[in-house]
Length: 147
Length: 124
Image 1 (cartoon, chains in turn red, blue):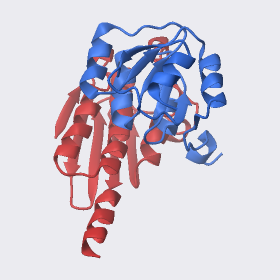
Image 2 (cartoon, rainbow over the protein chains, first blue to last red):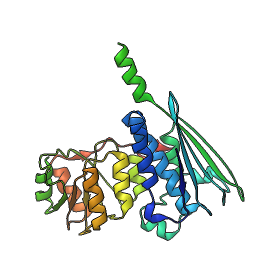
Image 3 (cartoon, rainbow over the protein chains, first blue to last red):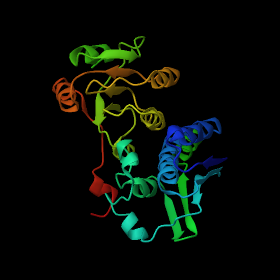
């Protein structure tokens, strides 16, 4: 599943993530994993809308033991990733904060709802984030079925 | 507390969910910052907010929110009401402030959702 997100497209902000969550449920992913993936996708989607130069993509892959979400853009890139990962630090414009975003929790939310989180960014090239969300609910169900 | 009792207590109007008067509201989280809602809200929580943009319902949908209460006299646009109807997520609108609505809810047994502090989300 690949979703293209346009920069500044506030009107549709969050709609791709809501679709992603629904698609994961339809694909048989358990509700808890789908919820966590939805949160990760939502934060990634709003980051693309608020911060990216040209928008970007959210790709979702359903693997046997995890959902993998890739959020990729082509710029501007993050100068200091550690600073961007500091709670409350934000460079969001006023229009984003007026909507309730830009609280400086986006990347942290993505990391905390992932079991593996990788971020690579270069000024002028862009940012790529990969999040692995383990399908723990599915494992629990399978264990229950087996017992 | 039931949805119908909650609406009456905060002098609110049920915009969506009149067919679910007995829906149990026992946990809530209140914020306007949707990033905080995404960070701290647990499953099956009622959201109290003054934001009426479309993103509120998308956040509610992703988080499996039980109901949304709009405070400070904010009335959501028709498109948002229709979206909530489609999702079957009850909406209540009240003129009370967030502080007042939360105070009344707490005094009548609604408790905070099991939330993590921002510090638990990071290394501070």
